Length: 195
Image 1 (cartoon, one colour):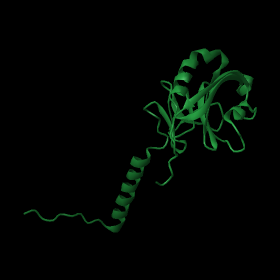
Image 2 (tube, helix red, strand yellow):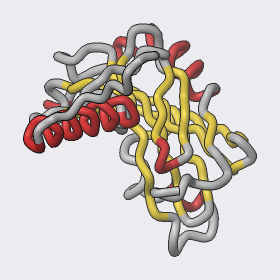
Image 3 (tube, one colour):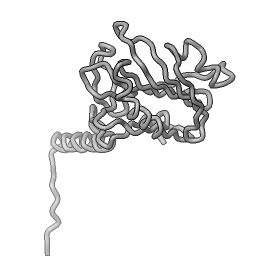
Image 4 (cartoon, one colour):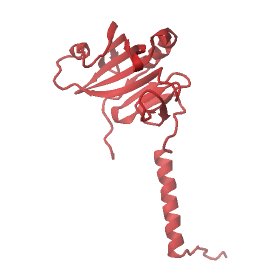
């Protein structure tokens, strides 16, 4: 018959083991900080948002020096091709729709769209009203830029998905930008934290 074998740890060792196990559990549930997206999909859970990324792009955020460098980070509101160049890049923003009567009025306001619109297309995204605008303007250091912007009204908010490149590079990136915008999915209800 086998003896009942149990390991008896002194209180300090037991506490260290419990802390280590808790840390491993947190990493397993939350993922490692700074982890890059590997599946090629950008997700922002608090918006119920997902979108396919261009091949080789990463999700993250700008570093402190806006437009200069990016940091790969799961859950970030930006996507980029290169961590060291400002363009091309994409972004997802959540804007308030309160006080507006229509999405058309919202996107026509110069405070909501900066630059010169070249085209405007009405769309449907996951059952929500949306407007796509292709436009051009000036970016960092007055460099000419061109972009593709998708405004999606979801209740009292507008989710704005934008892709920008230097104007002379837009033709090269436009098919990738369009493929990403066509892949946008927005869930009906936002996840409630803690549930």
